Length: 534
Image (cartoon, rainbow, N blue to C red):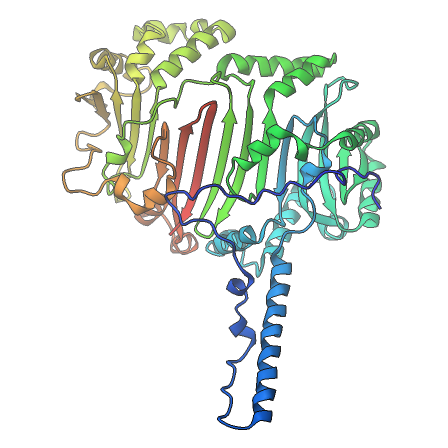
């Protein structure tokens, strides 16, 4: 029995719809048990019935039916083993929760399979774990061994479940304004209470309650009980904004983080303690720079050949001006063979000008950088627009050979390329460059500057571009319409590194690339990052 019946009157929210198929990957589908545990592994091929003999035919027919039923039983057992069990942590946290992060080590079957297949490609990480449970124990034993005085094998593992979450819950009666909460699923209540009671004897700032198979731990018993009282009134799983944000991640997630910054500010304003005032001041300071009156959700999703981190933000247009328009395609036109890493972003000049105006008033940046501004002859914020323009692309080439130096180039679309050239000359020395180390040239829409006279990152006619490269296409999803794109060819860097040992190359031979895209939405952005395999 649990000490609360919270969540029993609310349907459990379990997102299953993955949204429309992405162009860069096949449509999502359900993984059936026979694909993981094929029936042919367990059952011999059915013998062909003899040409005559009714009794024999009946016996064989009966055996065939039995074989089919046995195969179904094996498949059902496999599905039960792989299927996710229990409720999610948001079902045991109050509806008033303003920040939340969870780790699900018992995710949907597709995530279990994908995560294991992905980790098995990297023996240096998985350490040869025979299954996902062994990987989980290896991960948690390291965490508890490094972060607490508990002995994982004897005091944590015997009761620890597969889901854990941390949250911040408003509490007007608290001087801090927010109560910290750790929600941990348990499998053995008696052993869990024995471990926490032992900890409570030496740690005064610890209190806990139980509900729905979870223990809720806070910094005092009164705070833990206040959280439980909130759970009885309603849970985070039923909050409309949270449910909509979670569904926007498009697919099952292994880990999720969520925050409602405007609700957090309101909770801190309602408190009177000095800790709340300090936190509120920090949030308001950030608000001057980037507009924190927003919601954001982040999720981790596994595929058999990549790990994806997605973030969806809602800021109502109050955030930065970076990335509000699509890139002009400069990065996609880079030479694939000569590009080890690249970044393209739009609106950087306007965004930096806006940030400079806000930060100068809030943080006094004009005074802090007065000497540099005078030495370089900067006219701020106007020169930021000329230098960084409306679209900027930076690329890196790592030549072969131990003595070869990395080469960097920047292509900027700007309305004042001449002023940008003057700024490059005046800023070179303060930032540690010699004027002869920079090689600028005027282009059709701005300027290009390189650290090497022989490095022009633009693809020659007939050469393959990044946009046509399959490795880039897999690593950078949703590139159409993206306002920021980043790409790092880790596999190519490793292959060409003369200092990499044979063991390193063997351990990481399946490492592909890192990619990122940021796509503007009607009221915020969607960011997707991927680490791929090859």
